[in-house]
Image (cartoon, rainbow, N blue to C red; front, side, top):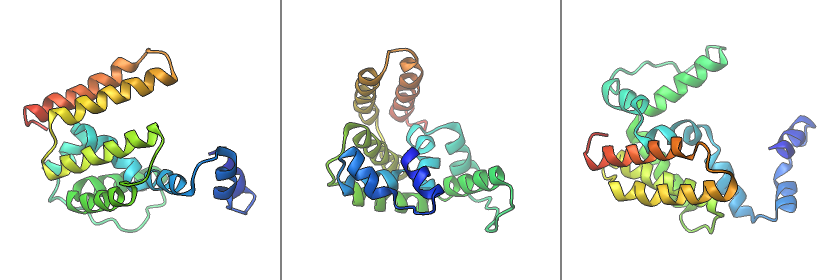
Length: 176
């Protein structure tokens, strides 16, 4: 991120090749990183994956209550949240975008962190289709815990694991 910001600040914007040279990553992996960093995905995936109250509220309760605010208000945060709400309300469009993303990243060999995000995408698609189940989250939770513990101490892992297994329980009871 520092490299990208430096390149953009200098006006070149040619950070990708420097990133590849610095990290040793393949170009296709960089493209996956950029795809996972796009606003549509980064703003919504956590809510869709976990089936948060925010996701359920906008996708179920307010689904048909569409506010058409296509133009910028000039307020960064208001525009951000209005875009977020619009994306969560239109689950059919979100599903199509997620499916396109999965198709692009499906056969790419990824490092473990990006592989886990790809799994979040796959589970998010299953949620949007109404096909998510308990075992999806158990497998994911185990992988998440292994990755967490390989990178840091166990502190706060329980906070995330409770959210993942809570989503698993709601999926099992079909109350998501």
